[in-house]
Image (cartoon, rainbow, N blue to C red; front, side, top):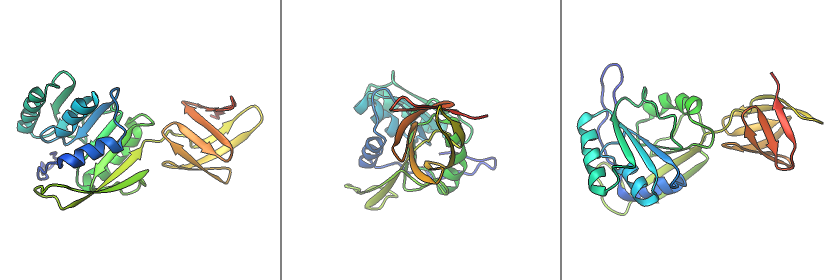
Length: 229
């Protein structure tokens, strides 16, 4: 599925069809999404996203033969106009435009991808992993499911992990009548000693509810906080 500088390879193990369906469901996939599958194998995840949800899809796969298989599978499924498959290393490829990212990769690779997810993906992007989680970043949701049919390399149960890329809110913010300092650990925030929540751009603490808009936080009540430099 991919290689590092020493050209080692992980085995190609396909994701069971019902797991594919549940991954896309857990991500809340919609027609306006771009679904990027890292280590896309035979293309089944992005093809399913296009066929079932009308989403666009991007598959990134190191094995050139599997890229060709994926393109043929997309043609047969009638979704070639909505999906693209490229040959490349997921540790170097550009998937920054994706709004949904799916992965079925070994923990070492997920660990290397974690900083790229945070630095390159837009807040609100959903990431779903099959079987393996990120070492430092707590998932927003975890789901277990029974696999209905025997599948090579797969037991009878799968665990899925969902992360929502959080906005960067760490630092001091100032409004008309208040000044706050936010400490942040991924989606977990502390606002002047008050624990809050952060889901993409949606932010809340105490009685405050609002959205992050770049260097502004706009409250549902019209209050505006700006980031201090």
